[in-house]
Length: 347
Image (cartoon, rainbow, N blue to C red):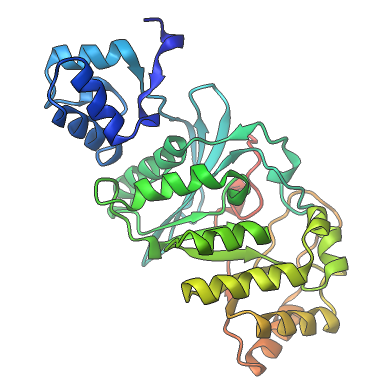
């Protein structure tokens, strides 16, 4: 069988793997062993599967491939952050980031090659969306970052955020399949409470997540609670009125009991007015949430300039006055273009 005819073995379910071995006259439990190697141990080669005989490994090699990723380049920031250029089996590239803090190590993973949306302040949005990542390609990023965490920081990965390249809700099925493998007993066994999916806001998909009973956390890239302003900085939002977004987040809370994190950047002359602050307060009062004010990281767009500390404090003060939880998140990895909004395959 030629390489081009080989199936990606990680596209098969555990039951399908069992069926393959039965078809070849082998015991079905061999499929369970292979499944464990693929999804619990993260094997990238059939020869890694040491509890299978050479004959069985040869059989797998003849019929299947493991389309694993490769870290083709790694950069480390002065603050410890690591950015990876991740080469996929078809030679396309995405980026992933390991973000270390004294108490945790977080993997920031990508879900698309490029991005489906057009947020004006994000470097990734300048790239054409080439394709969605497969579940195994998302899974592999987590495996690789976990290995880096243990090598460079002496501890396992503690958290995962879907805040890398792409809009996760535009690759919903594959993202959910990847998270299922990451959290499964026969997978990486990571708690869904330690996973956060960040979206720019697609109401019908937020409702679908709630209906599907997902257990992970939700973050919304908001940046303005005034429709006109939001459309200028995130043009795709013209299709998604804030009223619909509010309704979907209320639905999310009713179904899951979990609040939403509102991610918010503040720029000079764009969303730094009193009416912008008041609009955010009104929005936050309608949606069970906490607000995360993020430091803006330059992508060489002259019109986007980080607001000064006085403006940021004005936001914090009015949110606290209205008893809305708020934190300020300092970006990490900016010196290697690894911070929020900077992932653009500059390699």
